[in-house]
Length: 193
Image (tube, rainbow, N blue to C red; front, side, top):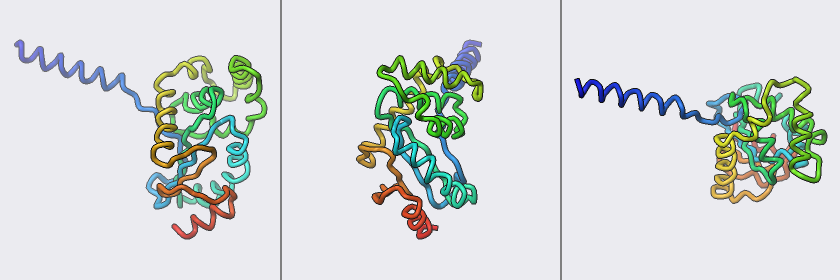
């Protein structure tokens, strides 16, 4: 009887710890099994990152992502506290989808302004009150698990790729050293496909 009780108790504890442990999903698009894997490290307050999202990404999406030729992962490399908080919001639903991330980049000039983090957080709150996304900004910003995931991405980028600026593109685990223009990326991708 004691042995059965211990087995049940151990099973319950194991099950409980598994159910409490949730992994933050990486935001990505495209074919997860694609031969060509892209990672873009970016900061949500970086103007060049917004330019990449608004000018380069749509062509990549149309010609390579939507056709299943590549997978792209959007990894956080926050350059300041405002970018960290916005990254937490982009990951808040933990569904791996990129729609909130793109929404933040597309509207960066509307929310990424202010002299203090409190002002920027207020702008983020007002920006999301529009109702397009049903998320609790304060819950997102205080999510320690998401914060750890974001900071681990940043640490890994520095260690593995010696990253020090955004946006930075990694193609099949190699840093892309040319300017992030669609034409340059397209040539490289075509050689790999």
